[in-house]
Image (cartoon, rainbow, N blue to C red; front, side):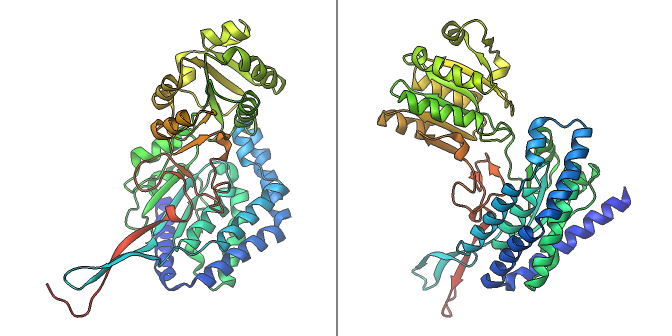
Length: 419
C-alpha cells in the first residue's frame, strides 16, 4: 500500500510541477502538440487497435456488460473521429489570457478579468479509452496539466494512447508530465488520488454511478460530475407526428450505452393513440423492450411490460424504454424535474409558447426543442471534444469543453494609485 501511495503521490507532484511550467507556453506550442497528437494517433492506429482488441478480449472474459464493451471498443472510424476532434481543439481560439470587462474605477485603477487555467485536473474514468486523448487535448489547450487514472479494463489501450501523447509533447518541447497516465489500476489508488489536494485542483470522474458516488463522497478536492443520464423526450399535443417518431427513435436507438440516450418517453394524451403505435412498430423492429404506464398499455396492448416506480428512476443504458402518457406540458415538466437527472431533456412541438415554457422550466444542463437528446455532446456542440458532461450547478453545466476547464481572476492596472 505504501508503495502505491508513493507512486501516485510522485506522479501527482510531477504533474503539478509540469503545470507550473505551462504558464510560459505559447498558443503555437500547444497547437503544435495537439496536431502532433492527431498525426501520431493516425500513424499508430494499428498499434492502438491491437491494444484495444487485447483489452476487449479480457473484458469479455471478465463478463463486462454490452454497454461497457461498447464504450471500450475503438474502431478505425472512432480513431479518425478522435484525431479530428483534437484537430478541432487546435483550431479553436486559445481562451487563456483573454481579458474582459475592463473598466476604470473612480480611484483611477483599471479593473478587469483574465481567463486562466484551473490547474491540475485529475481524471478518473472507466472503459472509455478515448477519454485519454480527449482529456489530454482539452486540458493542454486550456493551459492545464492532467493526471489520468483509467480503469483496468482499458489499461493496454490507455498506455498505447498515452505513449503517443508523450511523444507529441516531447516533440513540441512541452513538459511531458503535463499529461501523466497512472499505470497502476489497483482500486485503492482512487482513494489515494482523492486526498492529494496539495497537487490536484479539480477531479472529474467519468464512469458508472458507483464510481462517481465514491468520488463525490471521498474527495477532498472540488469535483465536476454527473451521476446519471436519465434523459426524457416529451411529445406535445402539437407535435408533428413524423418528426416526433424520427426524433424519439434516434434518441433511443442511435446508441444505447451513452449518457445522452433517451430513457423515458413522455407523450401528451391527445396524440398518444396516433403516435404510440407508430413508435411501437419501429422500437419492436429494433429490439427495444417497452415498459409503459397503464394508459400506454391500454393503447399498445397488455404485451407491453407494466412500468414500475423504479423504471422512472432508471438509466437503462440498454435497449429498454419506459413510456408514460401525461395530461399536458406541465405534467411532463413536473415528471422530468422530479425523476430526471438534470442531464438532457427534449420537447417535440410546433407550439412556440410550449417550447419556451419547456426551455425555462426544465432544470437540466441541456434542454432541447425538436431535436434528439443525442446531440448533447461536446463534438456536436462545436467544442472539439468534451472532458465530460456536468450536471452540477456551480462552475460549469453540460458538456465541459475548453472554457469549462478555465476560470477567471481579477486583474488591476494602476498608475501609482494608493488607497
